[in-house]
Image 1 (cartoon, rainbow, N blue to C red):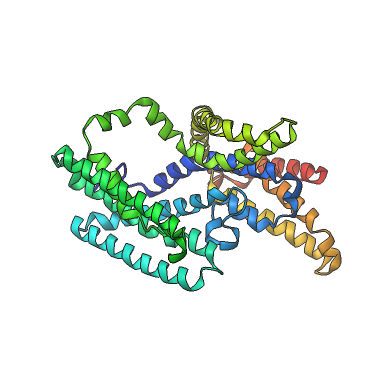
Image 2: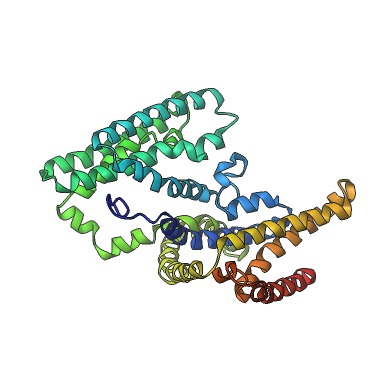
Length: 387
């Protein structure tokens, strides 16, 4: 609805930056909270698993898809959609609405057939791959985009009777509800109770969403109330933070000495989570987004990523050279990981503080670049050695 503008310039890089800024600040906070929960064993976890989560690519690796904050797998899928969205839109500009609708439905049907056959034949071995791999969610993404294009091209100008809109709303809702109840009751007859993870119900959900968009009755006015709009805006904060806060809150209650911690948890967690989600959205997420947006205007991501890659190479190479591949090296693995994570966080923070990643460094003379680089590198080395 925001970016489908035929004839207007689409700045792909700015779009990607905007999407990154919208998602990443609370994502990394949720990751930090999950690390706090796993603090006792954090340095025994494989660095590649942590790196996959830091760079939001965990769902591309089935073994890592549910690592740390297990609900954050969907952020990998979302970033994948952001990556391909501009190119799909450019292609859709020149295609008829009819072709887009039938093409998206054909993709959905083929995807469901593949998903069904794979569930039936290899469910027990590759369930994480089936549930979380981004390509299995492509069909629902395409249906959603095409639903939005239909609304912009055709739907918003339609004058439909309220009865028709309500029939679409109620019909789609009932079909989803019936499937949910029936599949739960006879799930052994289906490939798996999580079959909708592959987008099975997407056409019904798109119908429900489009019907809501077409509605001009008191229902639409009621859903436009500021309280509900703000709750919708805070839904991402609630979603991405709820798992680590669930774990930390449950642990705190169990160790606090309360008589019945489980009952207290069951009674208080939902309202507490809603309140935290709203507070996090307005007083954490929005300010952090503003700060990150301004930061990205001043720094070069290429320099930052190159620095991280160089650091990783140095840390792991030094330990290999010093201790070889034998038993001695294995005894220092945890120390190696500690050194890696100290370098991974301390070096970029100091680099940002001293201006080592500023955009002007790409075109400056070596004398202008060397001072912030030496200062940040030297101080980082001292802090890492002390750690």
